[in-house]
Amino acid sequence: MSPDRGGRDELAELADRITSCTACERLVAWRNEAAANPPAAYGSEPYWARPLPGFGDENARLVVVGLAPAAHGGNRTGRMFTGDRSGDFLVAGLHRQGFANQPTSTSREDGLMLVDAYVTAPVRCAPPANKPLPAERDRCLGYLAEELSLLESARVYLALGAYAFDCLRRLPALAGRLQGRFAHGAEFRLGGTGRPEVVLCTYHPSQRNVFTGLLTAEMLSEVLERARSLLG
Image (cartoon, rainbow, N blue to C red; front, side, top):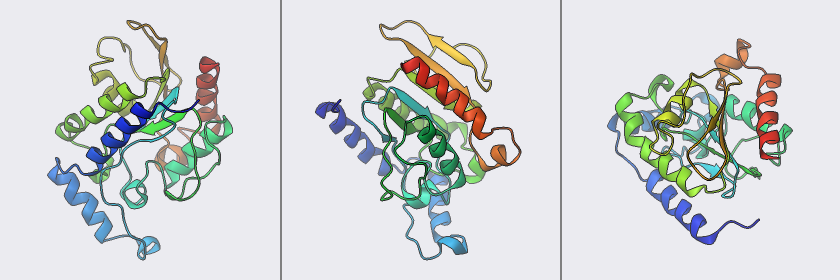
């Protein structure tokens, strides 16, 4: 199915506004500091060092919602979940269930294509210690709300962690419709619209969660398999 030209143009216009945003002084300073002081492994690479829009299939029925770009991942490469271990873990899982054409995510030019899936986050700049301030989150949430409104085919939202789940509950379109508490594997069916919508939950694929075994490849695959079954 070809993406609607109007929707694609609107997503591109939104992406332009996101990438030029300088609303949060602390986050602007941090993303620039990370770019100016990269680890030795990335010392020769240019950094994106700007906010990040979401990416993927404009007609996606699955929307994956994370937390924020990593200082030396997305903030370096210019694409969500790209160039870090969280991205490796997530994209490998998406590939296993047919939502991605390849199991790796290393750069914007790596050939990765998402199939019936779109990846985004409520906070668009890398935050210190991966912890956005509430005011930073609230300034950024409008972008997520607008982005989701343009993804008109979306039927399943996958919250990567409690932070993403909480941010989804704060969106005007989902406020009052998304009830309950975050838990890995939890499933919430949303009422109030003419289209079926479901929120699924899994732990965030952070390096810490994966290394400690809180989230395994099998656990992520089970949730993504459930998403696939809901989409039919």
